Length: 178
Image (cartoon, rainbow, N blue to C red; front, side):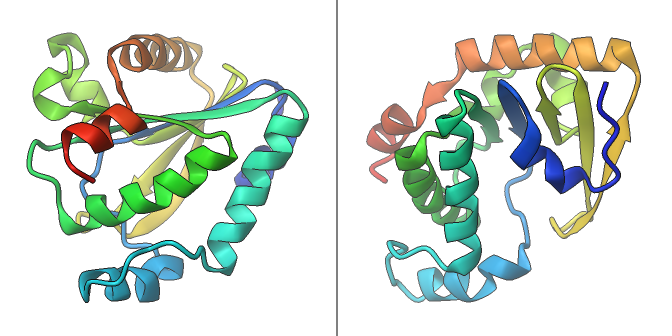
């Protein structure tokens, strides 16, 4: 198992898959602050900023080495302004190869409720797990490596079930007029 001190390096070095479970209705990301403020004023998000362009290159690099990104975002039935903004970003990510899906909170299987609604994570190659910790309002705190094999297996199971249940980005946008 890899043990990389700088967890973000995993985005460049994973071999086959990187999976993200997102459970918050809002993430306060300093790199998105200006774009989000413009979105709230009614401006469309169509031109990625420098940080977003860097992320797109990361996705494209993974695709070029036959690896892939996927994510599922657990969302409320009534989308927050932030989620509407983030979906505009997701549309651009998907063009680069990110497989993005959604599951409504009400559709999360009961056995996953306490696990998935309190545990944002990145899972790399089904072996390296990082819990992503946020403040109550969605500010990033830290990424914490989890070495517990049972938890890693549970995250793999969660990914498999949620991706099967998840609504594709295109279908989600269509059904929500986004």
